[in-house]
Length: 105
Image 1 (cartoon, rainbow, N blue to C red):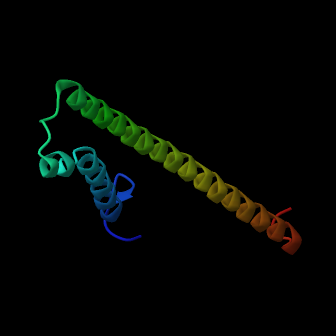
Image 2: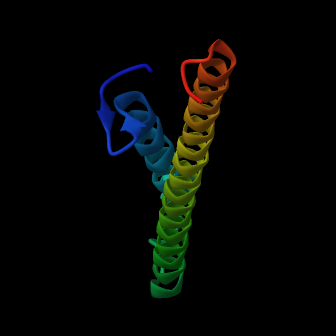
C-alpha cells in the first residue's frame, strides 16, 4: 500500500479527498465575476444558497466516506471467510492424507 494507513485510508487518499473538497468550496465562492465587473456585493439570498451548497457537499462527502467504510468492512469479511475456507480445506486434505498413509484409522 502507498503510505501509512489510518483507519483503512492512506495519507494519499486523505490528501486527495481534502484537495477535491477545497476545489469544490473554492469553485462555489468564485468572486472573480463580481469583482471584475464592479457588480453589487452578494445579497443575503445568494449567500444562503452558497451555504446550502456547502451543506449538500458536506453531506455528500460524509455519505461517500460511510459507503467506503462499509464496503471496506464487507471486503474484509469476505476475505476472512475465504481464508477460513482455505484453512478448513487444508486440514481436510491433511486428514485424507493421514487416512491414506495409514497413520490414522
